[in-house]
Image: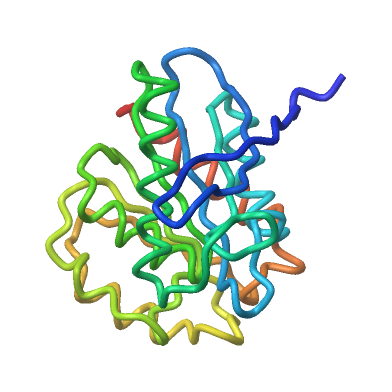
Length: 212
């Protein structure tokens, strides 16, 4: 039997219920919210990159929650330019904190999901560690992260056709020196031929840390 048995559920958000997939991990290990790409361009919690990011954390025994932003599939509400979507993230963090009070809260996002996720984490200090996969820095302003002191890992492909790698490099120059930057040579935005490499790098980064 696969260890990846996802429970379907609804979480109450400010704009209504949020459709979610949840897998309970080992007690005491981090609980991770994973945020999907842009809702207006087909982004959902079932996006392949989001699935494999979640799978990476699940493989390590972590609790993982994927969810659909407001207005996506069965989630209630309507698109809110990223602001309401960051509220959705906070709602999922509230749920995880209640269900797993013993676990550090982590957050991971892909593309637009990095913006909504990091925006939520910026004002929610319960989040201990963050992961930004292909952050859409050419579309959204991440200036609010410039004084961030918590652990953050950024992963980007050098051949990203949607978010130019040079834009991510420029953004990284504005970030605190403790932020980890990992490039995936030759990878596009959706890591079509580099998914395994991205997952291995993500896992290696997590396992190299001695912090929870």
